[in-house]
Length: 368
Image 1 (cartoon, helix red, strand yellow):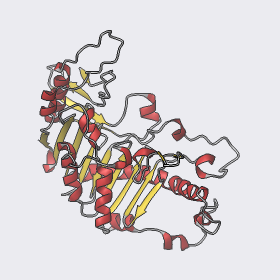
Image 2 (cartoon, rainbow, N blue to C red):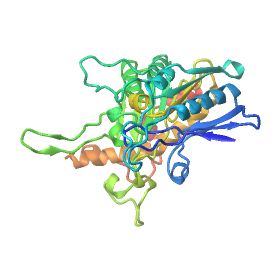
Image 3 (cartoon, helix red, strand yellow):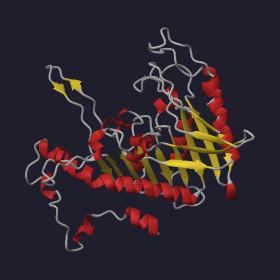
Image 4 (cartoon, rainbow, N blue to C red):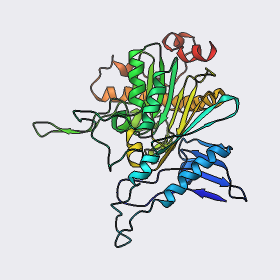
């Protein structure tokens, strides 16, 4: 028998964003759960980067089923008429309070797991980040920040849209740590242009001129290398890349990287961490949506599998983002002797000179 959590259709800004299913045996005992970032649609399976995990553990399955039962019992007021927006649709503060405490389990070989559910902050909306007295982080984000600060060598992540500009999310926290400790490698890829570190929203100048929103394609400094998913199209790259019609899947939507993944020190069997689920890894998910976040510590094989996935997606978009960034610099008036002169001409270097410009941080980490 399957139990699942689907979307709560409403107009309140709060959504059922979970993607999990719990399997119960013939006696009604929860035995297994499937979770991750994958929407059960064609685009989720075939059009986006996602992850999906099956966990065969009675304790974990029971925790997910208990959460499902609490959602089911948390009645929402019906809109009147029924086809109107359900403006009062939100989890009750009582359920949000329950969600503030994680469910924990110890797996085989001493591996520990935490299951967080949200929203876990009372009230209806996240306070503004510009407040004179910044709000303390939600408990699940507080936990992620604590784990990030313990990173020894590397932090990997894939995100869709944790927040505008990456503020109050694992993006801002990881980059801040990488800027303060240049021995730390921070590697990630972001899907939504608004979530990219360094994003600037549109603004109207005093003279009435409107400046459009701007988002970099690449942020690279010290051991930090973060890119946003960029299509390899004539428009993005700024020049023809072939005689055929060039239409990458990315142009079909902004959620091409739909993963919500954080990996810390995957080569360290004792301190490695993996976090995944439906949670977008920013404050809004903790305040606004039905979410689940699964954190595993000390499972090296799982951490390395997720790190491989992160690097696979990152490498796929790194060249595209770098080329688009150079094209954008050229459009801003860079001289022919400037950045545009270093762009790839379509031919591979026949010598090993390219290695002089390459970073060996990742190869050194994985082969140390």
